Amino acid sequence: MNFDNHEVRLEHINTRMEQHGDDEVLALDLKICFDLANRSLDQLSPTLRRSLYDPDDTGDMLDPDSTPRLRNPQLGTLRWPGRYAPVLFVFHDGDGEDDDLRFTDAKLDRITFEAKDGGTCSYTTRIQVYPEDSSVTARIVDLLHRPDTRGTLEASDEALNGNSNGDGDE
Image 1: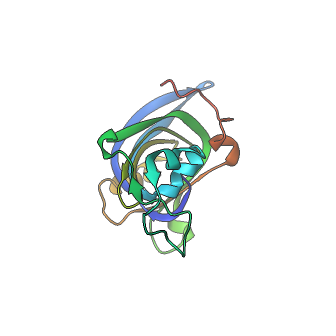
Image 2: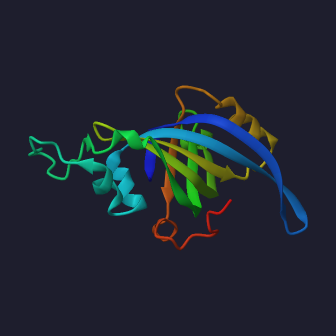
């Protein structure tokens, strides 16, 4: 599910305090939605995409691994268990990297996706971040429901392969 400078939608923000040792730290739970090609399912499980999609009847000479035909559209939205940490999550907010909101210790969980005919998957996830201060929090709030928001998500191979922190039971 890694993506770089991709269109995302910030749908909801939940604020809460976490205890980190003796310190209380502000944590934000961000509900993020995005569409990716069905190849992104391969990062969750190497057999997942082939269990949901079939190749096109005509065969794609340019991409023989193309699987655009959804097998069972009746499945609707599917839930993928697990928690992945740490992940890098970036909101690209401006013209340069200095304007970006970078979270290197984010957590990714509550993954749901809807497989669509044609080879697109619509994802909804929770990404937990820890803003440095109130100005960063305000900038995140400003992104809520903004249509032109772009983001980057990089989950380490270790996190994606099940060696992540947490057990996904939240």
